[in-house]
Image 1 (cartoon, rainbow, N blue to C red):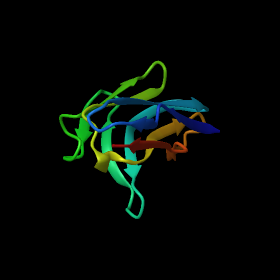
Image 2 (spheres, one colour; image 1 turned 135 degrees about the vertical axis):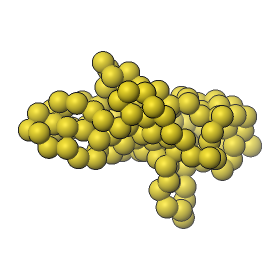
Image 3 (tube, helix red, strand yellow; image 1 turned 90 degrees about the horizontal axis):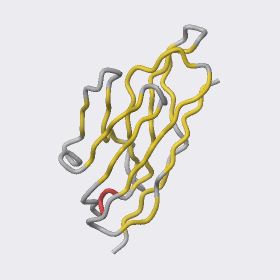
Length: 120
């Protein structure tokens, strides 16, 4: 079994910063791309940022220059540093990972989600 466990969400004021982390565990042979997605109330889930196993990153235009994605392959963990947060960043944030298991099955896995709320 594979699990992704997120941490770090919470309540923050506009202009503030927050850091999210997501650790993968279980029957993992290797991890390819990892990423963060978010879903605001009444909206579809959208991509925030992704990072390959080699460290190549990709960001949504709405977060470029404010958010930074990184990963620690040894710890099987992906991070999202969020700076200059805006009210429109309020959402449930989900981590995602493409994982090859010891059974040689490759699948997308999702974390349980962590709430990020901007308050005035």
